[in-house]
Amino acid sequence: MNERDLVIIGGGAAGLVVASVASQLGLKVTLIEKNEKLGGDCLHTGCVPSKTLIHTAKVASLMRRGGEFGLDAVAPTVDLGKVNDHVQSVIDQIQLHDDPERFRAYGCEVLFGQAVFVDPHTVRVNERQIRARRLVVATGSTPLIPAIEGLQQAGYITNESLFSLPDLPRRLVVLGGGPIGLEMAQALARLGSRVTVVERLPHLLPQEDPQIADLLRDLLLDEGLSVHTSTSAERVSRQGDTRIVECSGGLKLEADLILVAAGRRPGVEGLGLEAAGIETGAQGIQVDRRLRTSQKHVYACGDVCGPYPFTHMAEYQAGIVISNAVFRLPKKTDYRVVPWVTYTDPELARVGLTEQQARDQGIEATVLHFPFRDIDRALAEVEPHGMSKFITHKGRLLGATVLGPHAGELIHEVVLAMKTGIKISQLSATIHAYPTLAQIHRRTVNTLYGKRLFSATTRALVRWVNRLIP
Image (cartoon, rainbow, N blue to C red; front, top):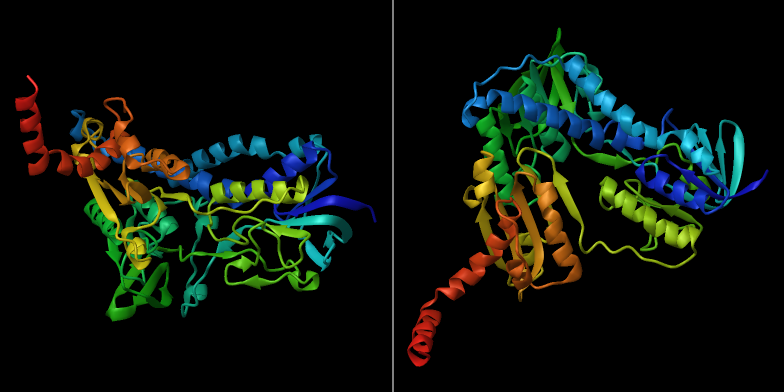
């Protein structure tokens, strides 16, 4: 049995980054993926297909809104089978970058099958045992299915099956008001489904600022979605093709399909981690700040260890693993400035602390707001909904939430400001091109300086200076 320098379990975003770098550097690398294709959840059932579907739904929405732009409104004819064919075509284009032959050309051995630990240094796949000096577990996550009476018998879909649906459901119940649930709820509603969202907590997007989350909820309601917060699905039954969802408070919903979007769970099942002595917890595999597991030669990165279930975090963590496992240079994770985006329309982007989190930490934060309805570019594009909200302390940003058009793009100026520790005065002093949506950052900061500039004290000082100096 030949020993490999590195065995990577999982061919998603994190695993592919590690495999690409390590193999091109000349290490003997084996990459094992349990599914038939590389790319992971992000490419096949997550980020790529969902954002493609969301954009298609946006186009359908704009067609109906033609009158707002001085055009004739058009009611689109939606064939979900054709839409999902388009989704698959985008996946196929990106799949070329994740072709196994590309990695084999780097010298990486690529195997398909379920990897199982035999001992801390050995895994078995397809009846073959492979021993490695170091290993990386990057097996991602899978949909969390809540224990609701009758759900399994009645049938449901998740993001893993949504993008192969041939027909648009007339009535859809979405269990879960988190990012996946809301993104898909709005998209399918715009394509023509009658959608109801059920969320057990008091607010949609429970990890976000409640003020902003409630503003988004109101916008979704205006679009025709039904939303029930503080509501739990208690049992599901089926009568013919109709699913009946009975909820707390006596609410009863009828649906043609149920989309379960109640969160994710780390992909640790079937790996035989106990045979390797690798410890797990609520977030999955337990790791230190160098992403080492309880077996220091075994690393984990991505959704399987958390704490953030985002592709960009998987790629970031892969870089940490490369430093430690490949270059053997100790490097620790730094999660102080982590952005994320919910791709509803308008988008909701967030980085750092919310107002409540700052208060909980005993910080007397200064909170700044500015609405998109006062941004000229937003008005020109008939996208005036949403606002920015900055959490500041002693002239520096602690966090920001932006709800508005292209918020996922806009948030990165704030991310860079927080990463570099610059003062908010520098955001104000930075020239922003007109007319752009990015002007909202400068305008938000200027709400603070505007109060100071036009105060009675400043006005008196200006009058005195102008009398003193001819």
